[in-house]
Length: 520
Image (cartoon, rainbow, N blue to C red):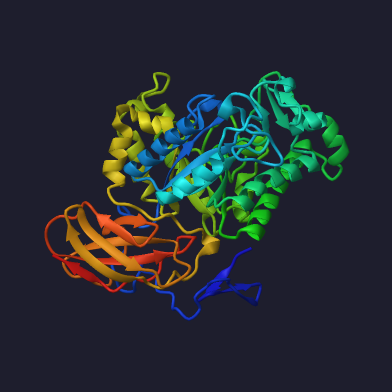
């Protein structure tokens, strides 16, 4: 459903509905695009997602191994967060339900095996509560990453705790490819999955719910996903099992989307699928690729439909190939996905394959230190691309060939605000009162007072010389974002500068700037 937004109200099929918390009396003046100002420079975007995946399954990133103490686990996560901030990232995607087990005290599923090494063992703290709070302390957006159907990384159900739903309901489980999966065709599994995730949505202050590329499992040669009995019982409306399977995943995506928006409208929902929906040789509307896997046909994930139906707030296809790769060219897939999101309220981010950099198994482009930076430069010519997510945190830290050092130099010289989801766009909060600006031994210290209860974070701008109304057209003068009422600009050089501060709401809608203050 498309929404037209009018100064604190929403027109839905001709009916005027109030938007809770919208400042109707405050005219919407977008500081990013004042009338008569030059176009924003795409090299310094004001809003851009800059995120990394922090994977917990098989202890890829965090915790680094099973059995660490609570304090050791906390210290590891804080190091990931601090490194993200240092790099210029503004979001983290943290895996909190990796294998039908939980990183919080869930009433539906046991404590995760990837915490203690033994499923069902209390780690001594609430990892999800800690992860969310510490992300927000650093003004990092927190995306909770959930895997919907994977139960375990082996087929031995007896390794699960006796109270695990997969043991209580063995008819829910299908072994395939050396792993166990919940059967997506069972209505009770679909509802259970939504319930398990919504428990976290209700209880924690997450900014987003995130799925990766796993729905029905990737095909394994010589094996059959044995859901024939489920199809016989529940597939009566479908002549083709593939259509029925796609319907099952559609039901999960649409159902979870509706549940999230009903419970917490400001929480967004995003999916990061395998980047090839269908090859154009299979479907003329598909991408100009020759991929061996197509999500529509092999994973039964109709990702294009999810965008068109606007069940998602963002899609982040894993475009894990280099520019010029013949089978799946980055420079062809990004434009294709840009066309998919065009005309919708769905944001487009790109999943980046840091793990391929300097890998001996990869071709020459992945041994070019600049390949990743070239991806982001290419994205600038496609305004629909609103940012990037890097896989995964340990590869970002490894910085092979200094590829992320180069990305920071070329693209992250200035901070960026997190993007606003299309359905959440509305007037931003009233400007704060900039109470004081003064040079100190540590830099320029700013203090301000909040004037709008909707203010969640603030953006600080430093403008050389005099401030003018076009100074905030892009992010070139943005020096920091912070929660709270103070900021120290440690990078301020000598000279005369003008500072202004804006307020942002929970969805990152930015209000008008404060009255300027000059420092010399």
